[in-house]
Amino acid sequence: MMEESARQMTINNELTRYIAGEILKDSTRVVMNDEPLISSGLIDSFSLVDLALYVEDTFGVRIEDTELTSVVFDTVEQLVELISRRRAGEAG
Figure 1 (cartoon, rainbow, N blue to C red):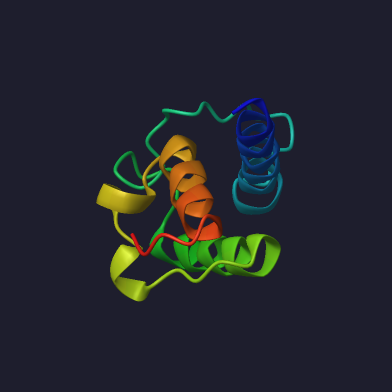
Figure 2 (figure 1 turned 120 degrees about the vertical axis):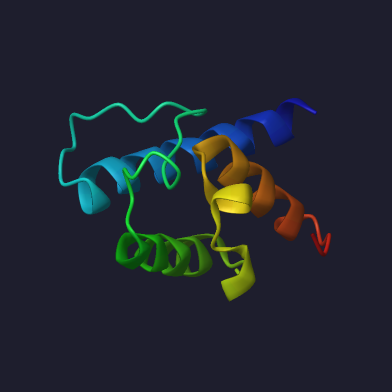
């Protein structure tokens, strides 16, 4: 369990670094785990696609177009869960 927690923390750190530096263009910006990204307007649809491609390339998981919504993809916490599930071999 501790190993899974460490993996999730690593995923979390990589995601927040990418979102702050590459999408928001402010590497000093702190992105909170539960901060709404899409529903708040922080990330637009173009940036959302970039983020999905980053997730696929970096973590080796497939993100379906239908998952690019605020229901699935709105917070870093949700993204970490999605990536973890995919890596564990679960379908959804």
